[in-house]
Length: 244
Image (cartoon, rainbow, N blue to C red):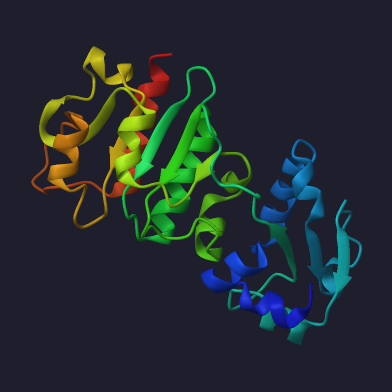
């Protein structure tokens, strides 16, 4: 890919148009290489390195650039000197689910750090699929990719999934609500899909009613009204995995 086009990958519209995204830094490139062993489509990735990484062993086509060029290509202020251009999966929609798989639906999540942390948690535990509503932050945003610490390569992710489609795909839906049953209730693990809302607005109440979502609450003893979104998803994912 031409260097001028790589610079454009910082923006969602160009990631979509060019069908690629950026992976930056030594750790993430190592995770990408591991994932490519199991996912042939990732072998089409291309590597860009400065002299500091000229002896890097990689299965990808490798291009050498100078430090000035790397600074222009990278999203970080002080790039390490190694990044990859990775193809976005041909289709984000992967019909069907693996046996025992649970879906985590995120409605209009906005914070890249939150989404990256959530992806990292779900990939760590395994057995999850992440569905993102329209209006959510792009999972291929460089900040999300970095925060995911490589989880983006190991987790089924679907984007632009309307909230109205959830009832067609999942027979039993759960959500978080201050007035719900405790997360430790036996029934918590009996659902197929778990809804989490926008950091400030949550999930529209009318949608929850239409979906007949069963409410649960994370019991706390403090004075604040809510948890960070990523923390809430982390606790729910742990509770689900703990029961298996």
